[in-house]
Length: 474
Image 1 (cartoon, one colour):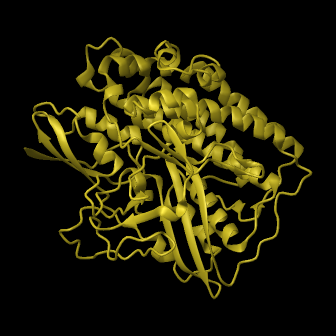
Image 2 (image 1 turned 180 degrees about the vertical axis):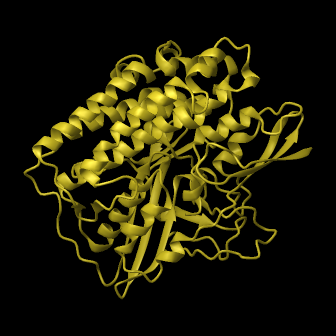
Image 3 (image 1 turned 30 degrees about the horizontal axis):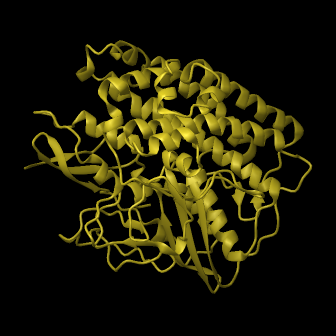
């Protein structure tokens, strides 16, 4: 058995290193290391609770609205308040736009360029990949970036800017769109639909959202999606990268009438409710001091000596003692979409990418519905007062998966603030029981060819999770 260190990875957010144990040409074990500690939770201790609305969005420049929404909902929960109906709707639009842009960015700029690599020369689809997805040159990349830039006009209208908007507050949003701005939002979404249907899907988004079986999916040949599916079938990507098979979602987009997608835990075809009290972060193999704890009781105490017992700055979150995979595939499976359910058992690279593509189509439709439902004459902000004492949690869904903020307030200040990010779930190290994190489990069985320093299949698997390492350890 030989060891291979892979990393740092390009085209991922932040720093990542993976140690592989190779036996008989395949990965026998993997150890994911988040090598950068940032300490946002420590910065928040002792601060005014409202500072969380300013500081936590700066954890990441890609999913800052997700962090903002989680912080706002945590403070609202602690104060016993809720967003107004229109405030929640505007917040959902802001959040949905960010998630939609994130998915499109991941597909075009982070994931697909690997298929343009010279190691795939001679494959029937390689020439098209080079033309569409060569880094910084691909035609599909340019089209995606232009469409993404136009889409973010909506965050300018509703949030003032992106990233790091301060528009989302515990009781609503700070800005009311007027009638003309509502028309503009609808127009921007119409333009983004033209991009999706003209290049990404090559057909109406509703047609892709209506797929229900793996056979239906395999018959899709249009657009960049069709090119991905052709390459995936040729390389057998459906067989690589299966995670733990337990899919978690907190439910996306809290609205007055309930969340837009269902919350739950999907395991082997069975869906169950989530008991957030069973979430525990373990640190036995992390460079952290302390013991396993629920986020309300957790601590962020870095082991500055980086002792031999640990190998990552990432904690190891578990639900009821078990690992969980989070992300678009998890969300869509928990929500009961038939195509996601058909692919959840497969659970590998193809399934994760299709989960994101499916979510692109469904989110576009949702955003159009929400934009039409905006009422400029309604109330977008309610009342909120920081409690002297209290605790609250904000559970949302970022593009990469389930995101939770937990705040404890004492004497009007933050006594404890803990964050469990999507990549903390997916890229966690082993716990005290030796359970590997979802990525670590997914890498087992990946082929490693003789002389491969950065195995291409390993890269496909890692990028199918779309890691955001700066969020992982905040």
